[in-house]
Length: 126
Image (cartoon, rainbow, N blue to C red):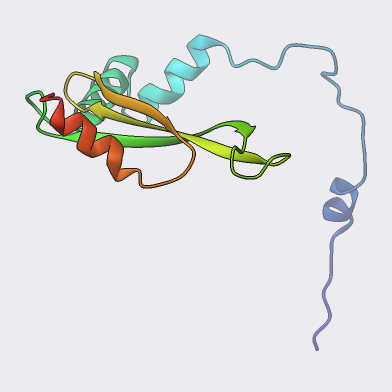
């Protein structure tokens, strides 16, 4: 193996030291930030326009009831009627219309098929 030579400056940089600006604000002044951005060919206006373009590409469907999304969350533990002294986990299943953000159907389940929630939402003509 070859030898590695480390300069004293590099080694000293690893040692702990006290900052000279301790207790002072280290925030970047807005003028300095704007100057750096403009040197890179960017400005606050350009950044806002680019950000808006990215946000407008977010996935969503047009028209109600063209896409439903389901979400499942853990609910509280409840006493188990079939096994006294035990508790069972419950789940909240919610179906949400993507375009309108309307909750089409939501119901707590302890056991069984979550497809029941979807079937119920369809049968209600939503």
